[in-house]
Length: 257
Image 1 (cartoon, rainbow, N blue to C red):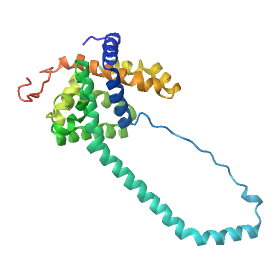
Image 2: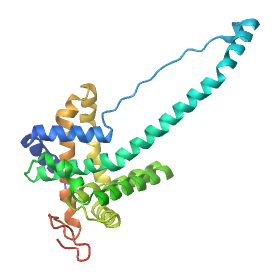
Image 3: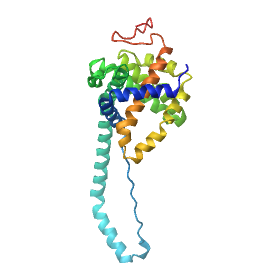
Image 4: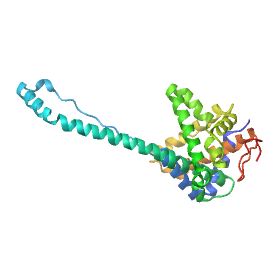
């Protein structure tokens, strides 16, 4: 399948400019859900010279420390429990709320690229076979995670192989995981390296976003990238049977709309 980065990006730029503010908002929400706006902080610590302490000082510290062992262990245990609960809560939110909203955001960008800008599309997953979308997106992330545990490179390859699953689900919420996985694999067959290069072509934009405290990212790069990904999907979906999905859904038996 022949396509060029230039063609995809030109179409993406047109969509961004045509539906600028809505696109910025949806891309911003999508970025938050994907964790693209997080930051890290480091800290340093200084070592103390215990060799200069006196014997009596060590005795005092030892006796003082023994009084606080119980409370300290209790605090550590409570901290671990809080972290565990936070991780579980985050996982539940991600599976049952964030992932469906992400599919809705993909739905928005798909429709906007076709000329319809409707922010209500972000709620698409909650109105169209919600449980199936939750299951399919969960399985997509689980499979990629397990491959990544095996080795980093196979995980990256699988992430590109299943890259189209969110867009497929945004067009047909009734697709099973096995069917969505198969369709995405067929679409990305022979396209993974070119898709990787397409992503890599945005590196200067991401760097510019970084040095502008993400202002360039929010108001241009993020929606620009999302529309580019949509154009890639629309280009590659002609490789599978029944390439153009509509509101009647995809007939898995016949492969027709």
